[in-house]
Structure formats: C-alpha cells, structure tokens
Image (cartoon, rainbow, N blue to C red; front, side, top):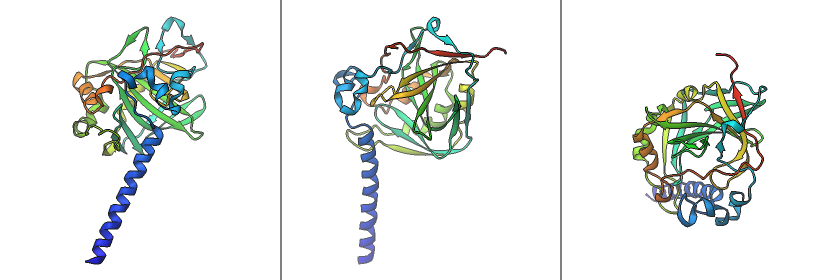
Length: 275
C-alpha cells in the first residue's frame, strides 16, 4: 500500500511538472495579457511588455492593405512550391486570442526563394488581418512555416462568406468541445490524430500571390517574417466563423489587427504567364 501511495505521488508530481513547463512556455511567449479591444487592445500592445515593443516602434509591421496599383510585378518569382501531408498528428489549442492547430511532426513544406520551411501550425483571424484594395474579408487562415535558421514564412489565405472551409469542417466537432481559456491558465488543448490536411493544397493552388517583408500580426509583433498572400479567395461558412470565435476571450472575438503603414516597403506580385 505504501508503495502504491508513493507511486501515485510521483505520478502527480510529474504531471504537475509537465503542466508547469507548458505554462512557463506560454508565459515566456506571451508575458503579458493582450486582446483586441479596450486597454489591452492593439493601440496599447507596445506598452504592455518590453517584449512587445516592436508592436509600437517597429517599422515593418503586419498586416497591411495591399493596393494592387502599387504592387510590383516580379518576373523572377516562381509558382508557389508548397506541399502538405495526408496524415499528421496535431493539437488544437485555445490561446484565448486565437485558435491554433499545432502540428506534431512533419506536416508539410514550403520552398520559397531557395529556402525550405517546415509547416509548424495554422490559425485563423476573424475578420481578416490583411486587406486588398481596402476590402476586409470574413476570415484569414495563416499557415506558419519555420526554416532551419529560425526564420519564418507565413502563407495566408483570405476567406469570404460562402461554402464551408474544408479544414475547419474536419475540426468543427473538436471546436465545439474546446473550452474557453481561464484567466492566467494553461491554454486548453484537444489532440487531433491522423489529421488529413491535403485540402490546404487546393486553397494554396493559385496563379497569383503577393509577397512582402512584415511581422507577426499579434504580440510580440516580431519582424523579419516573409508573407505570402494567396491571390485566390477561399470561402468559410457563417457557422464556422461562429465556431472559431466561440472559445476566444470576449475581447478577442474579432481578432484582426488594424493595418500598418508600409514605410517604404514594396509588395511584389507573382502572376502566372500562361493558363
């Protein structure tokens, strides 16, 4: 009996250590609470933590309004080289300001301008962060990729109201089960086993895309991010938008950052020459 009690205590301590490690990771990544409204909204992000300073003093921030007449056609750009796996384990996470799918293992790759990036996670913003010619869309999907040198590239798909999005459809049941995040607590998680994300290939198959140097669109607003905005607009249903918003904090239901100044940056365009 004594041995069983000791073993039980060891198990509890180990579990607590794992939770504390996870919590510490979240605290390190987001040391101060932020939202998309009120006194912790985007206009105040830079003052909430020294780690968020770029949110107010950065010069290459995202998102932006892409004005087609001001873009630069770059003939040296290639068609998008992006691949996705048909079976990958992942975790659905509610950070309070966004819902994210974090991939566990090889989920896909992006090769852009000679550099290879691995797909690490996807998440959504409702409404869209980016705008095209002043138009804000119903939602925006971000596919975050990381390279061996720790640089990052984000492939973005803008979504308008319409038919259901195929990826959200696959996780809609889990979205309904995902708890809201209690204040200052570890983000709730739900495992996703053998998730097929091949439908992302259809969303990213395009004859046109935009690219520019920018930043993360939420704190810490890290710069040096390569953005690739797909020119083809996808669709998402109203029910799916509601499902993505439901578990978020009340101040982050509409989790789109206002557009940022270009500060001399140019938006380049890839356009396929032939059908």
